[in-house]
Length: 485
Image (cartoon, rainbow, N blue to C red; front, side, top):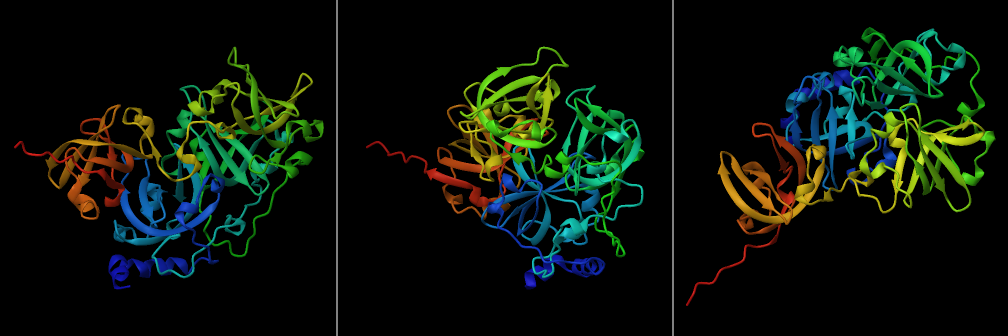
């Protein structure tokens, strides 16, 4: 208790003042190792010890706080404008315990917790931990619509919508737009804007979990409604934690909503077998899976990629366009004979029913695919030569022999080598003192190393950053040499 008081000091007083202005509903603290891809988009609260804080490397980059509860390690993403408002930010340092609440989302095959409200980071002894639910949504002003209230009757009209960022997709080339998927209580709408808008957003950068109010023109692209934004001033960041003075969030409806939108959404699709899909579900979002029995790539920018899925009882055609195909990871790219899931809107083209996929995350490979951290938080064991810049900020594990040790100010730089190559692993003194095998770390020892892929900018070299001393384990000691008789 004394340690915690020293660690946080007067910051607790400021935090308590903030908490007086919000209604708090107790939240359940969950073990970090229980968090998996099924929790993406959901609110979670964790308690743990800070093992490292990585500051931003640019004006638009976030802070990364690595938190462990001894079951697993989780990366907490905190944007700079939020970090500045944390009441206890001056007391945050490795070794301190905290409670953090936020939305789980995926980035580079890693599950992260996004902290979007400075009041959601608390001392470890806090009793009243707020739980975010629909009641935490900011009040909806008159004339502002929810994303799901936008329909075809408003085509080419300028409207203002309000919702929570579910997903962000950056532009995949110089002429493509940036996309925000804005979620409300009645559905999700895609918002698009180009680089001239993105470059002027400053602290209003859209990230999962943030609440935005956006003004734009209703349009359609490839059969899907979207909102086009031409000016950065039309994207407004709103605080979901502001007192509403008794106001409640109501769904503003203009026009008549389709029957399909009330039955399903991109977040809650109908799970159907191919044989059960018919024209009754046109307009619904569906979740289908099967083996890939045919694939036809796009032959021009306006033509879709076509994947035929079969579950043995029926077939269904899945389509997506070249811009989405560019964003697919290697393991997501369709191969005949492999299985996959697809989530998309059911449509009809020239008499043929098809599932139209509009987001790269909705193409999910199944079975016999390259393992990624998405299936859990355990780091994957990789060969050293496979570690590229694509792995930056991802936790990995490597196994190899220490082939060189260089003494530097504040620690040592280990060179770990396997059959494919070598990589540097800094072992700083403050980390080494918590390493059970520290005395056995020597040239020639075989080790298992677990850490975050990092970039040493001075030499522009990739290295593995240890978060804790116990993340380097000696598997085999250096072979002893006998003196000749």
